[in-house]
Image 1 (cartoon, rainbow, N blue to C red):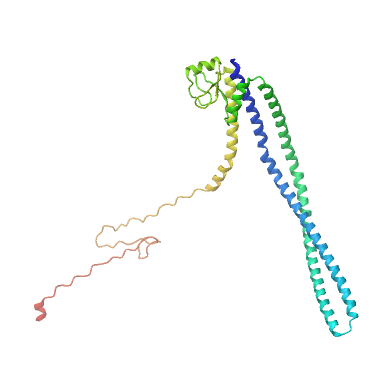
Image 2 (spheres, rainbow, N blue to C red):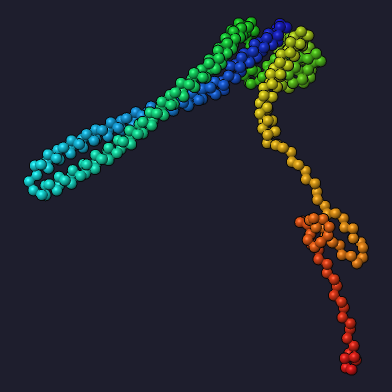
Length: 338
């Protein structure tokens, strides 16, 4: 096996990374398109529902009109029958039926009026929704067209990358290609990693044994890392290593910028929730009593306005002073008898 086998797989991996990046850029525009399409789809659905509702109301109105025409024709026949009655019994029966038909006609007329009012309000709402839909489409169409143009541009680049990959992979031996595709299908982000100058795997940085290092540098066969399972390629030249570091730094910077944009809004919300800092209130302690420790003087509690008095300040308990009761002298039984 030639020494360029791992190098060819590294080139294939670079093409796959560019293809993945292009597909990710295309998918990144999908949320924006959904956001643009949401109000238009909502208004379009509302307009469709209003049109369906108006059609149903129109059919109901037509049904009431036919029912009213039938009842009016029945009323005309009953009127002719009333003119031809021969006794009071037939006349009473015709009058009763005419009353029923008349009430039905009045109910149909009332329902028809309600339907006409409902149709009018739905027509007004349909006109407003149609105007809003037209305005939303006119406002959002340029933005949607701009995003779709960007997607088409990226798709053109993606097609070129895929054609380049198809031409490139023809020069990769079948055995190497199968191994590469098998590892890639396992979901590994890295399939081939160049070995470092000190003999470590370029993906997990686990040390490769000396024998395998020699085989990797010689390119006699494909060697996989015993720790992470990627294909270990010979060390890159200084120019290739520098280009790889720059590409990795660019990808890391793009990922950091995206993460920073996602964290801006939570930080602002946390600052708003924090609000103004609370003011520390000084602790209120009672002033020392100058009469403390002096015998014969009862300590006076401080009052609200300063000085001493009987009215204590709020929050300071009142301690009553209890004087001991005088002891009674023991009675002399002899004096009592005298």
